[in-house]
Image (tube, rainbow, N blue to C red; front, side, top):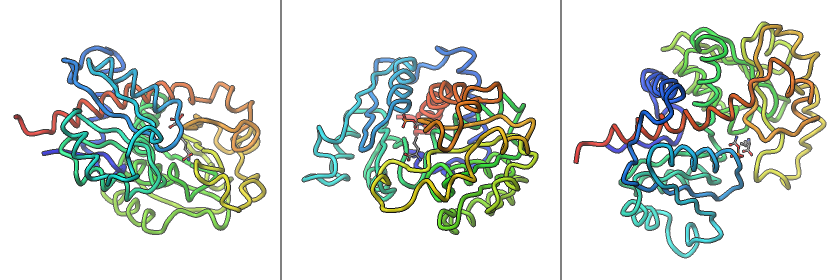
Length: 309
Ligand code: CP
Ligand code: NVA
């Protein structure tokens, strides 16, 4: 059966754990899996900018024995003149998997519905699930596991990273707290989904206003930009309400043992200070590296789910 990875809850808790186990093995032995040997190709499509996602998929696909075809939307018919479904049917004839970074989740859903190969979400307005696999791998390695650990996300609690932390963190059995200013709370439907998942994994979900309450005693403190791609001209004040949520030394005093995560790119001096980014509790560069290992594991796992031909 073709499996897609469009949202964090497309993997059950057991499946997420299996992908992370495989990622740990691949990190220890980078060339142990060669599911794309041939080489088979993977299409990696971008409707938004990227550094880490672009490079980490390119590197990872090469290390799996395959060939990445990286396409920026401006150079294709994707989404103009040709339906996404038609383009997806064509790509399915060429490649072993489709990786896509785009705007609305409806766009990647349309691609997946028409695809006969796995489709992987490389960031949408709604979710960033590949980033969360890398983050959870980092938490496993820095905190000795995910189950029962507390993750506090502070900042724009309405954005794709906050939503993915809620859903993926709950799937991993974590206690997830998110805190942002009024007007930047997560979608209640996502909170309900994460809460239901947490009920089965022993985790929990809390939406808070006070950043100090969110980080108190946390094992992991995470943040993200206050202005996501596509929000640059949305007319909202994306600085003033967020200053109390800056991850700085004072805020971290409430979580003396926490590691710090940021998916990057960071806006130093806004959501995170230089001192924290460059400090010894920062795990952000391990986190960026782990994109490669986690995505190699994900591709390997998804291809294993296909019915034998
Ligand atoms: N974290 C992340 O997805 O970075 P890029 O936007 O550079 O791909
Ligand atoms: N929330 C950010 C994440 C970037 C990796 C964005 O969507 O721009």
